[in-house]
Length: 144
Length: 144
DNA sequence: CATGAAAGTGTAGACCC
DNA sequence: GGGTCTACACTTTCATG
Image (cartoon, rainbow over all chains, first blue to last red):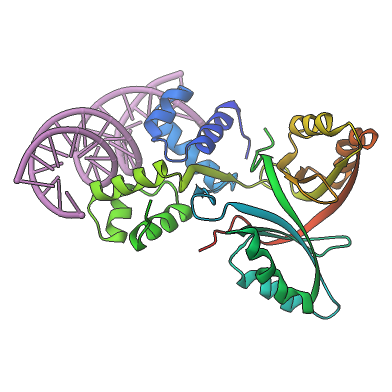
């Protein structure tokens, strides 16, 4: 449960490169291989490390544009709209929030021309507000 | 540059578990170890795989709450506000967008009581709009 | 893309503080 | 509880076809 400086360093190194061999991690944190292995296992079991994953470059995959789309379903359309978001693979993130809007999403686009075709089906059942992302000063930063 | 079904499978498996050994990947995609290694290297160099990373559980780290905060700097405060966002480690994501707001951010919180102390310093230089995240139907999904 | 040998890596058990 | 060491099995890499 308690996480010390060594754990924090292991976590930081694994965030930078999740495929770093245990032996190299061990060297960098100044522990033996088995100890380092054990700590990684503990961090996974504690749930502090949720999973190891590959981050893809959406631009390289043909999605050079992203937008933040806020979606406010009209009365009675909450569930249908949620399903529509789920079934449109361009939506990368979806958060259900308090306040004026109901969903805040991140949408990947092949071009600006793709925006209308994606959002049009929503306009029967929801109001949407779209903001094109010009740049991302940072993404997926960790609170120290 | 061209990505075939095997590459796609490798990418999908690595997204699920970035620390999966090449040998296991090789078995699952039906190739030899070296061929699989070579494909991973190519995917990294193509930029399709941006990086391998550890996903942390913010709740386990003591941040059970998150909020979407939209921030609109008052005239002349753009850069200062951007720096303030950068220097508050609670902000996990920051996107600069077109439209009414200027920044759309994701903020991690230890408790709802932490919201005011974090946002107060902004109120001299920006208008903010906060939406607490009730749930996240999905996060970091990939456009198939 | 596969093979085979060499170098490197991960894991389990015994042990220590 | 957490740490190390050693030894063996597995994995990765490099040359080669």
